[in-house]
Image 1 (cartoon, rainbow, N blue to C red):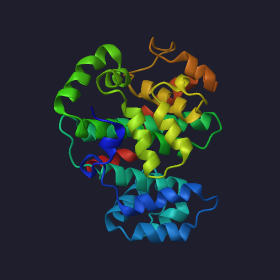
Image 2 (image 1 turned 180 degrees about the vertical axis):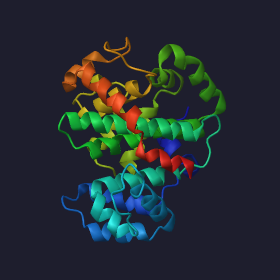
Image 3 (image 1 turned 90 degrees about the horizontal axis):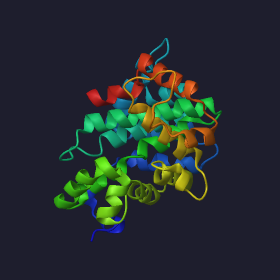
Length: 273
């Protein structure tokens, strides 16, 4: 029977992330990261640098004057935003193809969830970019399991998912779920424990012994992203307990959904590359 450790011990199952992304993970533990050093590290990767500049100059992030260098982008946007840009660039380019999964659709959903979670976090007075980071990683375990598990197990999980939900279906078939897999990967990549915790419990934040606001915000973002439209009343599947734990009312969450629909997601441009 496969285990999380056996999946993560095989390089062919793992995303091939650029070195600069691994370097930037270390800056999470620094209270005052060196902006110029970060820019220097990014400049070593021409592909990431080009994608970063394209994002920085997009309508979503660009100012009145376009930036021409990574240094300018880091100074203008700040470390937290640039770090998430590099993570997004690195992750989207880390896996070329996964049989049975449309990666453009996959990452489009991840970016929508991350942006919704970021905006909800700001309503709570939290650091939105940190929540965005957590959400960028929330579904990585799904890709790893899809690539690494035998085909018959993947198909069995798909059959059970409509009635059991993905996490429960995976637990019934292999004994662990995608959230646990993604969290362990994040630990091995040396992301902060708060991020690993958010990834592990995002699918059901009320299961965690210690409540994670980040996990709860991702959870709300997932439900919101799945809506085709929103009205005055919350949909039947709305996780009221989670929202109440965060102190977020449905009208505010619905307004965040509508704002994203009107304004679009600045990271979507990565998927056209």
